Amino acid sequence: MFWIRFVVCIGLLGLAACVSITSDPEDLKQRSTLDLCESYASYAPQPPFGHFDMAERQEIKAELERRAAITDTEWSLIDRHEAKVGMHECALIASWGHPQEIQHTETEKTSTAHYTFGKCPWDFCRSTQHAYVAQGQIVSLQY
Image (cartoon, rainbow, N blue to C red; front, side):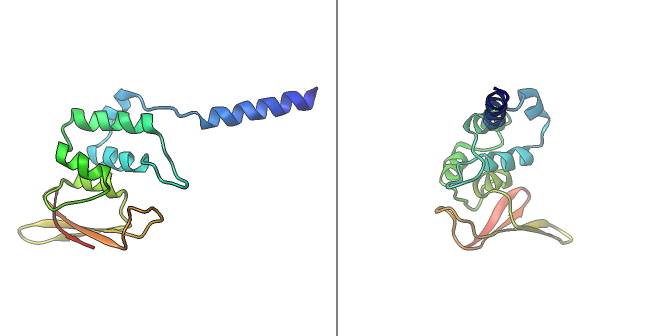
């Protein structure tokens, strides 16, 4: 009888660990916009493995929409995992995920960031991709 209870308890604990706990909307309001964009990308479907939580992703999207951080045109690009010159930095991160590397360049007149995105196992990925961002918007893309 002990072993049956033990196995049932372990099974219930395993199921509880699989249940998603969504973020508190007030907690989302405290997070930076760029952090939310990165979180949005990390909750995307990533077959055959990876983190996927549609409820969490929708809550993050609702908060980004409340902030008007991403335009409707950018959302359509994000859904296709694409980027375009003129797109906001946050939308780039939501679309392509966390970059492998970010290099910053400061000059007398401007500040730019060079994002490098590496290869990944999903079908929407290309080889290494580069995005150059100035004043919060993509100014150049390299595939």
